[in-house]
Image (tube, rainbow, N blue to C red; front, side, top):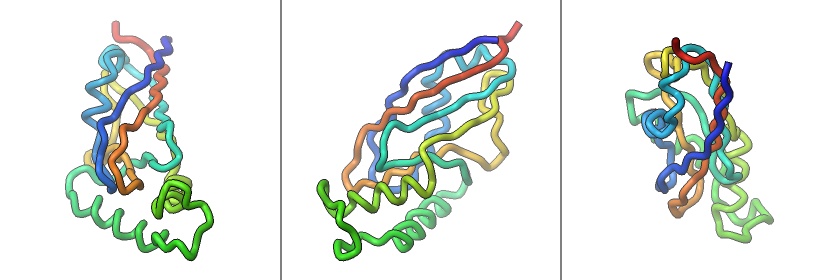
Length: 143
């Protein structure tokens, strides 16, 4: 059994829901050596989130964006925490709803996801920002 931990930088994305599965898998060099295990992924930010959902149809991601913008509208009369702009408190609220971590199974050097599942970076800020992920892997090595 081995434990690996690394920090990944995810390129800046505009506001919305972005599929990053391939980007994450390609950056974790140790992943290909894991026969079976678990990956824990933490996004180190309070204005973005992670979730696992549909990886094929991009309209799902735009529907997510529409839903969350209606659920948590950018209306300054509703919030006090606006230090960094109209999207300040709304970003924190959306992040808390979806969460900052994912725990994924690993099998034969890849995340063992369902056919239509992918990792989303949920960016809630109006301006693109670079995001950091801490990946911790616990698993049995190949061979």
